[in-house]
Length: 401
Image (cartoon, rainbow, N blue to C red; front, side, top):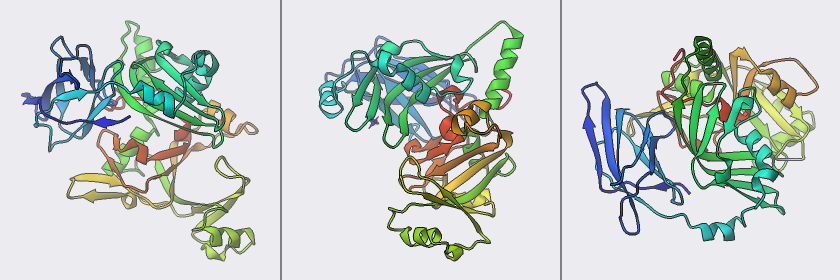
């Protein structure tokens, strides 16, 4: 469960460096308000973090003034997320943590599988870490903290974690401490969703060649990534960064809103879509429907300025678009392993192509460092959907870093 708490006791002191702050506070048990020692406190998707001392206190240094999520996690307690912005960064907060209601999970989700890792470990790692070459060099050091539950009737696998996962990415030279809140795999729809909070640590080596290899692979992972795209939206330079955008409309037979369009195209009447503006493609079924799916793709690329809007009230930039967005990264071709898995009957490599959509029909706030809020409001398919934890980088990463 995602819990937001912002009460009481949070100190922020400016540093001499412009735009940077110390951030300090106290973490206590919400029941008796006794301090919690050893709670993890970190900036989500960043490389700044610490643990609380015997008095439950913590201090984070060199914090840049921006929007970010401060995450507090502790074994057997519900994870707390405090949203920090320039407007509230100087306020005082006390972090009160509540125990996890384990008995509720047994009723709602089902009992924990005794042989969960042995049965579902490979499936989980493939869907969570990914199946790229980088993923083969990733290791989960503490799989025993994972808890697996499987609904056989509905073919739904759910995975949670008692404590943060420790992931060593030997390909990128990074250790990721990941607080997994929930992983969900729906077998019928072939859909994977998971969310959690990550903290990064850069690994060190005395071998210059290995260090250079990490630098090159990090840059390769960054190019065309969601972080790269979000930064380009914020800076309004999507085309310059190599992204090509097109509007994509998907038509389903069982969608009452688009049924007239669907029927007209299936009957060969394509004039309902301007053929000068759209190309029509028919797909034989998909993960969400047994009926054919019709794709209407805009022939004319969109300008990056048409998918961003500035909100003066929140003083932030937002990503917004209608229907779906086809995203093509023109500066790189797909990885061979992606082609082998997605199109096994061909060896032709195309430019990295993804589909983005807003499942909750809400605009997504984008940050200069590549973060976006709320992450569950932006869904990706295709190449970006294939890239998983093994390709992740901290939000303070810069190309060549």
